[in-house]
Image (tube, rainbow, N blue to C red):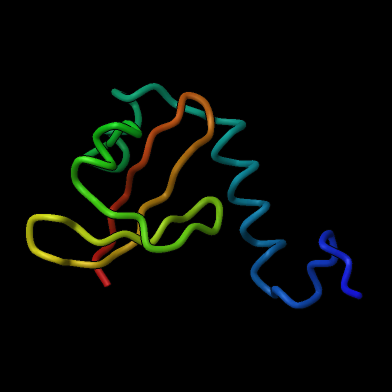
Amino acid sequence: MSNPSDTTNDPTEPIRRSIVQALNDEAGERESLQAKYGHVWSTKELTETFSVVAFLAPFVKVRRHSDGQTGTLMFQHHPRYYFNFQPS
């Protein structure tokens, strides 16, 4: 039986944890995130604009409703904002 806390099967886990920590240590308000990354979405705005395909903190894979474009967003936990859309 595998241990759910065992991350040896996910080589990206340490890197992602480091990014999550950095994002949350420097969690910004909407205005500062917009200055750094451009467009920023709240959770409500995210669901109005995209469908979430996959989730692997601090990234979400999304599909834009308007044109079907897929891509990734980053997010911070609190306040919860999504940003830095990168088309696939």
